[in-house]
Length: 357
Ligand SMILES: Cc1cc2nc3c(=O)[nH]c(=O)nc-3n(C[C@H](O)[C@H](O)[C@H](O)COP(=O)(O)OP(=O)(O)OC[C@H]3O[C@@H](n4cnc5c(N)ncnc54)[C@H](O)[C@@H]3O)c2cc1C
View 1 (tube, rainbow, N blue to C red):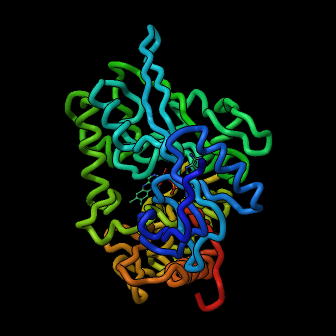
View 2 (view 1 turned 180 degrees about the horizontal axis):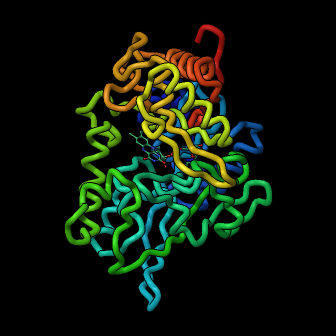
């Protein structure tokens, strides 16, 4: 028998603490409940929102007029073999506890992904990444419930079509529910030190341990309010609100020329730009936002830009989702007007926006 909760406030189930209620919600602690809940919603003609830790969703003030399936499947099963360790991780496992466990065991591959909030099942959705690692690098399979076929499926990394903060799963939110991940980690492996800010911290010394790298990542993240901490008001966010735009090289060159012409930078190298696939260039959204005249710590009523990170929008309490989305739109339009570059939202916006709600 399905235990349905009705009219459930969603704000407390998100890191932003914003948004209205769900018409109904089921906590799925086992696969049977999850499948039964999906069938119930389909029979009732209701849309479904799969919710993990709520750290990458923006819920509309009008709430979600459908069924929220809160994923609570648990279990971590390691298999140690000659070539490495294979980990089967259930979708409801808290992500950072898993990273901590891997680091404690001496299994390399996740250390730079320390401190990312949320649950394991959401990590392939936007191919989470930070400090030089992406989860796609260690995923060998994603076990899903295929909602259209009504069956379990195992997706290969190629089928997941991982990209920068993107995957086939993200592009088809009603297609599948992630049940578990298979990860391949490297026992005794060296940490990944690709990210300049992280590598610099260990320059000139011996190769750091996985734990030293994790600790350093956590302290860098704390300095930018990128670790959820009830004592830090700047961490009441959804992390980065915009992805870094990937543009044609000519567009990036034009941004650099404009920045030099307008005296925003003294040297071309001061505009952050990184090579991306197909000869394209990844620009830094945070740099564009500040160069377009927005400031860290700037507020619009109950919402604002984090005082420590121009990419994070923060809810200071008592606010509404429409205020947050209004600020996001102001930033998007401001960057576009100044540089002709389109910023895209990183979090998923769910629910409906009733007029005046
Ligand atoms: C302070 C802070 C820092 C952050 N830092 C980073 C960072 O460094 N790098 C980064 O990539 N992200 C970062 N994020 C974003 C976020 O933490 C990640 O995207 C995380 O993986 C989301 O997990 P979640 O369980 O909270 O997902 P939710 O927010 O609950 O869901 C996100 C999306 O995934 C879908 N989803 C969730 N679980 C499942 C499932 N089992 N099956 C199918 N769909 C599912 C949801 O429907 C939704 O569309 C940060 C967020 C915060 C608040």
